[in-house]
Image (cartoon, rainbow, N blue to C red):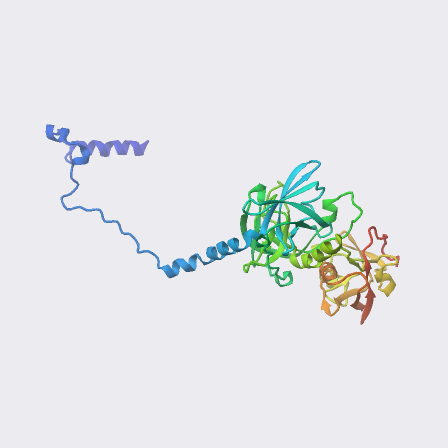
Length: 409
């Protein structure tokens, strides 16, 4: 209120003159008849904005370099990315895929084609062909589709990278068909490595294959939404480093955490799917707690006075498994660690075929990508204060391995 009174006083003073007299301003008839916009502000005044000089072409090119890279990459790779429409008994779903070879084989996710009665493959320019399902592997969540009688000019396979060389912080580029919006690109980084997914159980909860984790999964923050599944995850060179597979979300749409199956798993799985329609995995037959939440060797070494600070501590051995037949030893007694029962006293695996492993995920990833049934591997074992190499003849992974308990073997 005081401010309002002050403003009124100032206005009254300005109208009555500085001496506060009673004289008033009376405009002339000419002033009243002259439009306001016709009154000159000043005889010499001009408007001269102070504009900055344009940025040099060199600076513009430097600033746009990443966008030029992405545009070029998109134009080079999009002819190889397809939309996959799957007709099931429950309706129609959409996913993505990409050309694997010049014979018309396409890579996608197993969950994209799960229960398919018909598969329609649409290329980026709208060309449509019927797809033939060649093989499905629910463990890796990968599938191969083939399109026949397609002009060879359309069959442009994407170059495959090496997911073992991928590092956290690298650029990650996803191309696919989110929500049916064809040929979409999203950009982010590799957020983490070495995740695992229970792919087989997620695809077929009632299926017989249970208990095996899909290893070495790549985590990204590039947006992955329904419809992106099966599309390629690319690096800056346009090489496929993974197959976009899943998201972690409470809402059903992307919330910052996406997952991709590493391309080295594709290199292992796709040739077998093309040749036989199925994949056989090597089996060792051990159980161990992983490093997550501090229950691996690294997290338990100091607390439990272990002889090494990294590796895979065997808690249980499956009866009659390759590990059992080779003489590996599981734990002998349970120990409570932060409310979790840890089976102690078993062998610790520190290397496989000369490659050091620091976690169960690394061990499983090596077996998945580098071995097959009937291969003989060499494990470096730490048993108490003794270190030695032990050969193990791998077998095919059983559907339902026999259970075991701490101290039984």
